[in-house]
Length: 184
Image 1 (spheres, one colour):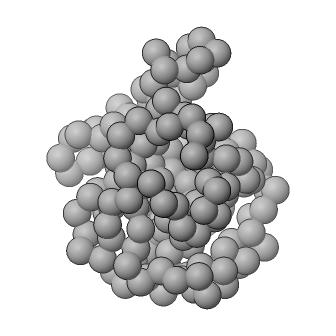
Image 2: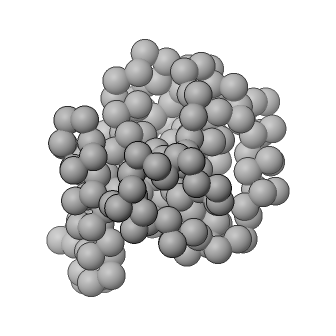
C-alpha cells in the first residue's frame, strides 16, 4: 500500500484487535457512533466510525481526536478495520495549500464533542450549525478547500458518508480496505 498526502481514511474500533486490551471508552464511542450512523445511513450498513487525513507517505495523519493533531496511522490503527481513499483531483500543491489552511484554523484546538449528540438528535439540521468540524467533516472540508471535484459540502457528514464517497464516487478510488498493518 502506497500512501500519499491527501488520502483520507475511515476506521472503526475492534476491541478484539486491541493489543492493550479492550477500551471501554473506545467501545462505547464506537458502538454509539455506529448506531447513529446505521439509523441515518442510506444503506444502513455503517461500520466505520472515525476519519482522518493522511499527510505523509510514512503514515503521518492529521485528525480530530480530543484535539486536532497528528499521529501515525500504523501505530494508532494497526490491526483495526480501515478504508483508505484517494481523490483523483488531489495533487501535492493542492493538498499543501488546503492542509496549511486546516492546520492554521484548527491545529491544537479542542475537539467539538458537544456536536456528537446532535448527530443523533437533529442529524438533518447539524449541517446548519456553526463551529469546528468533527472528524468526518474535517476530511471533507480539506478536500473541498483543495478543489476536489464533487465535494460541495462538509457540514453534517458522518464517517459512513465519507466511506460511501470512497467506495462509490467516480472521482475517488480505494487505496486499501482491510485490516491495517502494524507497520509500513
